[in-house]
Length: 126
Length: 126
Length: 126
Length: 126
Image (cartoon, rainbow over all chains, first blue to last red; front, side, top):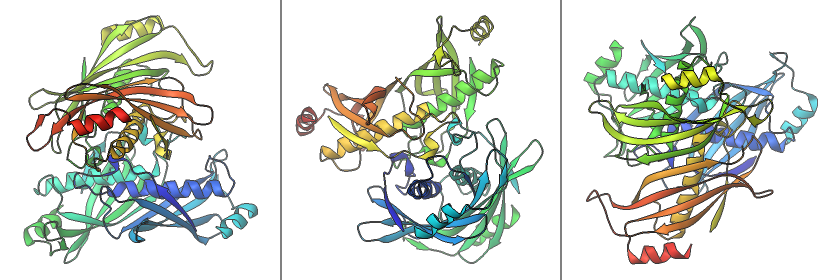
């Protein structure tokens, strides 16, 4: 499991002072990008996001610090899931949680491919 | 069912020229806001989004026009779902689809409330 | 002069219900993209934005419709300016105005180039 | 002068892999928010941004780390300027620079007000 502090931006908030619900997928992406880099695979993704799900647990207000936690869920033949938790690190209050499904993808050949063994081994260690 | 053309913004795209996956929740929100206004409830939402799900079906590239379609899914006692389809209106190609669950919410009393009959009737007609 | 209605997004607003000041450059970009397409040059820009300036004249609140107006300012040898006005189309109230300077750029050769005559002629007509 | 590392987001980039020009005002805002907090004034701004200017010096590409530097420019009776530099901290390469003008504002009374002495003194020290 990795935890990354989120640098909040003033326009993440809506007119009630809550973090806008659409922004959570961007927070997941911050975590996903950090996890991908930790795998040693460079900045350029070679996967497609096929599905995303967010469950909102408690509102994040202007001034609340936030962090994203990422861990690997299921690893299949050509796809795997990453699971995310957005927390307020002051008391570990759960703000939102969710999951994305990634499909290994060859952008040159434009088709899905099997997860390479070396990446699978790295994913299993996060 | 309502359909709304989306005004795409240059920073909706990522470095491959695809619409960034996080932006789809903003497109759903455009549809949801239009649907909410069509209900005659004003600009200010009195619901919370409790859950969101997106399935990515085919990439949207720079230059592709997009529209969002919204319809009501299930209506429960205090909550309902909206279902969305993002399409390329030139050929109705499905780009993404998904769903959000809304909980009727009294922001003053800070608690969920039953969907008023008049709103329920309006939701059933969309 | 071109005028384009802006499709506002809920996360354009800050916690006071004002359009966030950073978003105006995105509105300028919507106008610039429309102006560029009107020139018949395709979706892909072949210029760099070298400078941008925004003056905020009156706040845009949640629910206010907005439009962006674009016109060409000065045309120099390798650069030109676009001037923008963000207005509330209900009464033409001026919300913000500004300017960007574009430099004609050859992305392959990585250097600025002279504005082609055909583009200069088209710019002079907007 | 304050320097703050920027947490880059994947959708800050455009389809060429450059940071989108509109995003720089958000980076300025990150610096401004940090500077404002350092003044001990809380999270809620009591100023309006009246003007913003950005000059783009060199492109920031996917993978380049960035930081924002902020310092106070001119302090007038009711307004002051903040000056910003966006740099790549690896070699202090200048990516963009600019300035915003803030007007001290009483949001209750809806009018501009004189900068309080205590704030002026704090501004002079940054």
